[in-house]
Length: 313
Image (cartoon, rainbow, N blue to C red; front, side):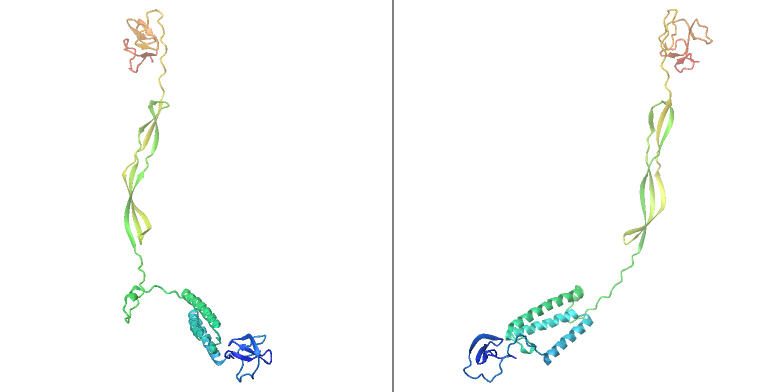
């Protein structure tokens, strides 16, 4: 119960009057000179806060709010309804802040009204954020944005994605065929010599593939044809096997002192009217042992087979 500000009998000191501010007792006292006015005084302060009973209006409002929150929770719109109730509480708090109080709702001063507004604003922010997180709003279709007011726009039906088709094509590739490397023994080359007698050349081969693609991505490849357009040439390396001829022996001096013919080396071929190979069928008069190397003119016809070596049989 509330009373306007004024002097009332002091409940703590009989015979005294105490100033009532309209909200609570003040510290000013004065003697009670006249009987107290016949109006209902404010409630006497006690050590414990007096419990206020809920009136029919309070019960009806709380029941309505509880029912709305319960129904919205079942329908999945709890946070939206909570934000709406909090918004209504903000409006009530603003009215109480302007008027100074709303006694029927328990808002007895502007401090309580400000507290109600702050708490209600927090609930509006929390409820709105939670509802936006649970039910995000997607971008509005361009067709709906451009439609004039009052006209209905048919919602586009969901078009199924087309099934990608396979595309089959033929692809050719030219690849290099490596050449082989072989070695042969060559009696025309001295032992220890290695000569590349044929240079290797790689060949070329054309491969044809059947390629299957789906949505631009290759999923299968099959070889259908091979064609050798350039045959490879094998590289041949010759390894010498021929033994070199032994060096000619030092010339032997003619015991008769006639000297040796400079057209021959290895053995002394005397300078005479005729020289034959010793042990042969010639009749001299001079003879020479073999073998004899012809280094000039075969004046005595000693090299019958023409290989440069005389008296070698």
